[in-house]
Length: 474
Image (cartoon, rainbow, N blue to C red):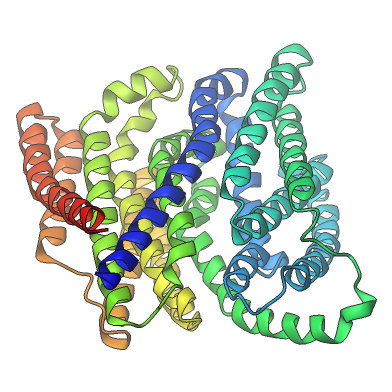
C-alpha cells in the first residue's frame, strides 16, 4: 500500500507539473503560432530567412557561451543538500562570462554583410534569452512552477503588444522583431527575480571558496553537454545554413516557415520534459523508478506519435490557414519534418536518463553521431533536392540519435524502452508522409491514422486505468 502511494504521488506530481507548464507555455506558443501569419506578411521571405538564421545562431551560442547554465542550475537545484543561494551566485558568474563572449561575437558580426547593423540586437537577444532560461530553471528548482508559468504568460503578452507596435505602427522591420523579444524576455526575468528575491544572493566574496568548489562540480557536469548542445544544433539547424550556401534566403525562409508547424510538437513536448526533469531524479536506479521511466516514456511516445500522425494527414489544410501564398509551398516539407521532430523529442526524453545519472558523456556521444550524419547527408542531398534533402537529412540524423540512446539505456541502465509497436507506428508515419507528398490518397492516410490510434490508444487507456487504480488505493 505504501509503495502504491509513492507511485501514485510520482504520477500525480508529474501530471500536475505538466499541466502547470503547459498552461504557461501554451500562451507563449499560441502567440508564436498566431503571429506566424503576421510575420510572414510583414516580413519578406529574405527578411524572414535572415531572422531565422540569427535566431538559429543564437540557439547555438546560448548553451556554449553560458556553459549550459540553465541545465546545470536545474539539475543541482534538485540536490537538496546544496544551498540555492550558492547555485544562484554560480549562475550569475556564468552569465557574466556569457556577456563578455557575446559582446566580442556581436562586434565581429557587424563585419558580415548579412548581419550588418544587427550586432547589438544579437547581443541583447542572446543575453536576455540566456538570463531568462537561467532564472526560469532556478525558479523551477525552487518549485515555483506556477510563477514560472506566469512568467511565460508575461513574456507572451509583452511580445505580442510590442511586436504589433514595432512592426506595424513604428515599422521597424526586422529590428522590431528583435526589440519585441528582448523587452519581453527582460520582463520575464524581472518578474522571476522579484519572485525569487529571498532565495538569491550577490554576496560573492563572503562565500567564494564554497562557490568555486561548487562551480567546478557544475562545470564538470555541464562541459560534456556543450558539445552535446552543439551537436543538437547541427542536427536542428545546420541544414538552414547549408541551404543558404547552395540556394538562397528565399528557400531558407520557406523551409524555416515549414519548421514552425512541427515546432508546435516540440513546444508541447518541452512542457512534458520540463516537468519530467523534476521527477526523473527521484529514486533514480531503483526498480520502481525504472517502471516509472518506462510507463512515462510509453505514454509520451503515444502522445507524440498520435499528434505527428494527425499533423501529417492534415498538413495541407493547416498550411492554407497558416501560410500566405508566398510561403504555402512549405507544406511539402512538413510531413518529413514531423517525423524528424517526433524522433527528436523521443530522444530528448531518453536523455533524461543520462542527466539524472549525471553521465552526460552519453548525451555527447549520441548527438555527435547524429550531427556528423546530418552534415554529410545535407552536403550530399541539398545540392540535388534542396529543402527536401535538408528535411531527409535532419530526420535521419534524429533517428540515429534516438536509436543510439535506446540501445545505451537498455545496456547501461537495464531500462527497456523500445517496443515493436513503436516501430510499427514509425513505419506507418513514414508511409503517411510519402503518401501525402507524392499522391495524397486520403483513404490511405486515414487508414494508417486509424491503425496508429488503435495501437497507441490501447496503451494510453491501459495507463489511465493503472493510474486510477493507484489513486483509488490511496
